[in-house]
Length: 138
Ligand code: 5GP
Ligand code: ZN
Image (cartoon, rainbow, N blue to C red; front, side):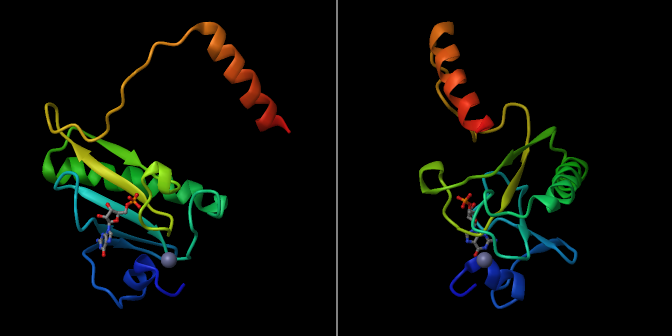
């Protein structure tokens, strides 16, 4: 894919700090990390986002995510890790080649994922749920 920065990283045209590679995936360190232990899992094939991703690679993707998360904990003493995966501009996606963030976390560390929990009536939730269920079962 022309002009895709991650395709260029995968081909080696743009250098990266690679921590894992196999036939289907490359795992690199993020150039602007949220914490020092911030890795990106990139499928070698160009998929724009999760909707395009070939779902048959899902099991392998999750296994790599778990292995990278454990490696971050074992190597740097992280106590947990976040998996972040943005789809679409509105959701904060900035590189339109599917990728999964694996971010090491320590207790009391800087907060990286925050949202304001809003109050919601059960009735509203039922209404929203019914609409979504209809869409999902279409
Ligand atoms: P997104 O916001 O699309 O979910 O995440 C894109 C991520 O890619 C960002 O965290 C950003 O720092 C990282 N990134 C962008 N360009 C490069 C690059 O050239 N090299 C590396 N290693 N990471 C990059
Ligand atoms: Zn690409």
